[in-house]
Amino acid sequence: MAYPTPRRFGTIILVVLAARVCESLIISSPRRTRSVAVESVKEAEAYRDLYEKLEWQRQQQETTRKRYQIIAAPEAERMARAIEASSPDRFHFHETSWDKFPDGTDKIVVGGYSPRNMISGQHVLFLASFHNNDVTMSQFHVLVMLLQSFVASLTIVLPYYPTGTMERVVLEGEVATANTHAQLFSSLPSCGRPTRLIIYDLHTLQNRFYLHGSTIASLKSTIPVLLPELREAGIRTVAFPDDGAAKRFKHFFSPDDFDIIVCGKLRDGDDRVVTVQDGDPKDKRVVIVDDLVQTGGTLYECGVALKRLGAAAVSSFVAHAVFPQDAWMRFLRGGDRDVFETFYVTNSIGTTTSKLPSNDVFEVLDITPQILYDLDVF
Image (cartoon, rainbow, N blue to C red; front, top):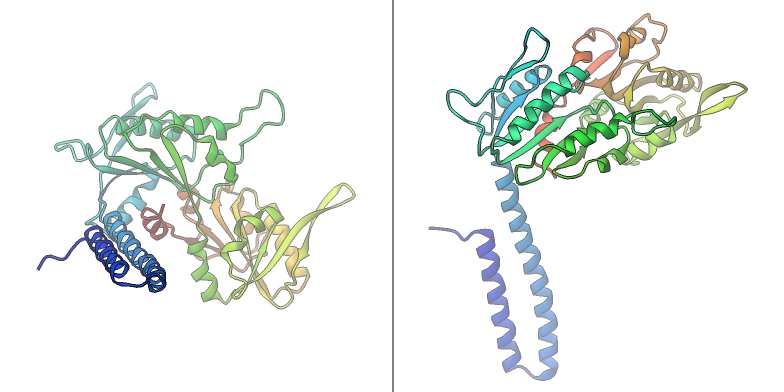
């Protein structure tokens, strides 16, 4: 027996309902007609709601059935293989050769084209890593090539947008590299539908509006990856290093489950001292949450302030572990910034997290499952 599709089922519902209303209008008195009409409107709204739920379920089924051909930057190949292994019926990874000519220019051969073209006409997922300028330009070469290959769609996953902190200029002549990167993305060829650029915990949220043309930002967060870790560790208090971080991340933490603390910097003569401005850390297990860490000075000072006010234990979480010049070493056990019970980071910058020791303060959270989820959520 063939069952009607949600769309056909919804049409049947509306036709039957219209017939019932007409019948009631013909055989009823004026007063009863008004009553029946009101009831019919309510029924129509209920049926319409049911129809929209069925239509939404149909759309979700179509979305989760979408197959992707994966191309990845060298630093993202491990993640690409993990995605393929998690759902081989939906994802197929094609290894790319990222080589150089003797003069230093790129010699790239993208996988999936030979001996059979498995890219053209397909949905393509590109896993990017812009950890330095050289690899960034190499990946833009490939993005242009893919979009000129008649792909059905292109989704770019760039977990960490490295120029997000350079979105404005103070002195004339400075370059806002967040803008120039956005210009490069916006100038990518069109494949018919917009290119989707998935970014996690973008440092300055207004950067999404720097993009225009054929590329649209899809902003996501890594906080859902952290929440199970906090429950397991028995951490029920979240601290933010400043008011900006609190406004940005506070809504992820239900007031029924977490106490909130907000820190901030106060001027003390020529110095700026981190203090607790709202909340009480006494006898609580606290985690400091922020989007990224560079040298980690603010996080360290915030941790010291929380401990000084009686926190039982202090941990820290950042989505992006930048740590230039191996600044992470200062947070190891015995280092001069050894203040955290656990320092949670994600693998959004694999070139950094691959160097972190596994038996010390750092715990690297894998965002691959979150990426799989976010692909189907717009």
